[in-house]
Image (tube, rainbow, N blue to C red; front, top):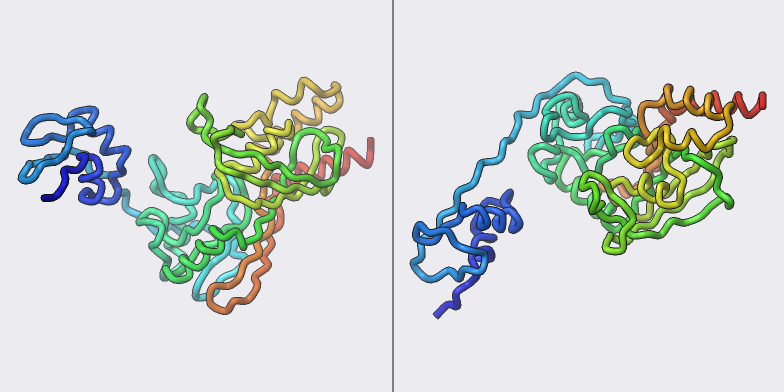
Length: 314
């Protein structure tokens, strides 16, 4: 005779894939799961011939539209495409953003895209924050997608960023090795926390200015907001970052001349000064080493031009 099983475990293999075990727990708590018409708890053991009903809302899946949005294409062939994403462009549709994304542009430009990452993310192998600019790879079929995803998970893809941060580093290079997890105070933010996932960021100083430093960053792991969180953790938040203390809160520490300069520069940059500058990976089909670079976008270049001019005149 088959042993009875908990209802949450019983349902996990029988409900549509978009309903997670956590969602099953929530449905149980609000009485949306019943046995023979009666609400039950998660500890309920399902018996033979018992009638289990589940009431849930069908997910809303917006229609994806092809949109003629200009793409800055760094590399493209029949198997993949690499673009230099501008700041302000969301990578894929989500709640409240069904149009105007990179995915909408890719659908217009590419005849085929992979669908391994779900219906709303065709071609998307990895992502960048909305206000981070730079290199992003998309796959045109599922086998290419799987290969690239494997390279990311094995950390064989080299990812380099340019970041303009507040303050001065005492050394020319260093590592930030600190676990990152979701902030218990604000679930939309991440932070260094003991219960987080291991995270490693390497940095090298490229240029020093009076109160800012341009660094090249290499990610050894790929956590959400990793560079922004790690730089804030070592008291060097990204210049312009509204989420992680990179805007006006730093100005008060400066002398009057630099306060005015910082305010001027912040007015030129409505985002964090972060750019995905370089990607090195193996082409999934040819095994050729691809070493791709994207120039800084105009807003970061303009800020750096002012800083360099001020350094010469100062």
